[in-house]
Image (cartoon, rainbow, N blue to C red; front, side, top):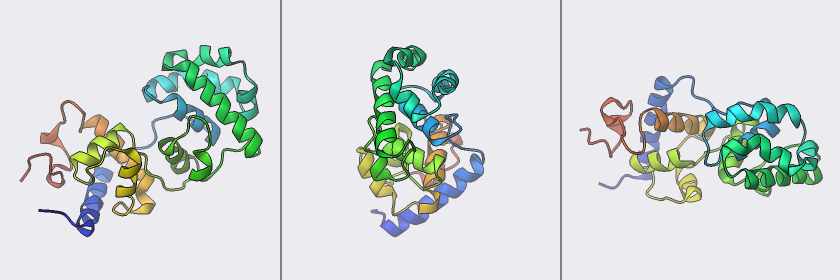
Length: 215
């Protein structure tokens, strides 16, 4: 039976409540102390684990403390520091490009709107929402591979395109909880609802998931 938007909103609220109880300390796994550091860490996290990024960033953050410092840096020096994150040449280019635009267009400060953030090299909606939600407290839905997988398994969307999934979720997940919901879904995707072998038997939201086979 087809689920109405109102019914999806009610179910999404129940999913949120249960995941809050299951993962009360869920948060952004990247380590940072200011918006610029989070921006750099998020660029580095593309096709790389957060654990690896957190191993690399302390030396990077110590060496480069401003957008100007990144923009003026020797590309090879940045590449050497971030090599283990993979795709390091492109990531170094994006970091320097984003930093240069921040310096020249935004007075050296990371912008606080999605429309401005996505003008930075290497920054799409996912990265922008990570920064908005975690650095500035502005709600944003982070649609990564976990969010795509779980949103489809949960029947909250049938789409695969990240932007379309974000637009589908926006009216059914409470706006004030967008950032928190993202953390919870990502955490649940890593801990329980894995891509290859989801642990449906022990899943905290099994009865709310049409893919689990629960009654």
